[in-house]
Image (tube, rainbow, N blue to C red; front, side):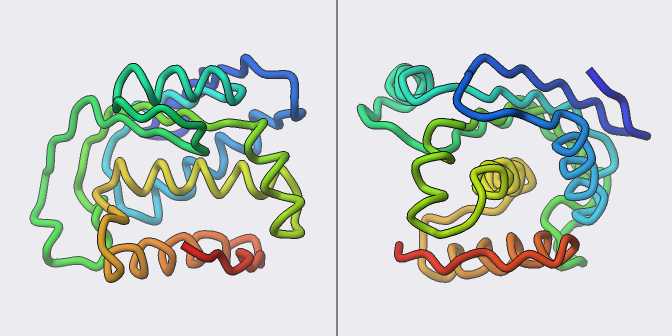
Length: 165
């Protein structure tokens, strides 16, 4: 576990499909939380394989299929009115879990012609944005979320490959 300022980040890697740079992921998580103006966060990131994420998807969401990322908001307090800022995480104190499939990242990275590490990072960013209050249930919300994902990736000068939804 690493504590960066006001963020506690714990990463558990239980898969063997992809080498994981924990320090890079901790830095990326901290960067997103800071840019979203989250005041405090306890984030647990689990990197798993497809069978594990499918089992969790089935157990918690009653969805019987593989997926790339699951996020669970365990607790959220808001210190200020986030409606006054463009960032949905502003002023929030978040406790949550993000679970990503490295196996899915390896498979999908070839389809989108970028690295599996970048694909996995996209899953982490996507899951964290859910914890901050973004969703992708409507076309408009999905557009906002995709735009925010790209803004985060702009920090590393990386363009996310276009996806058909």
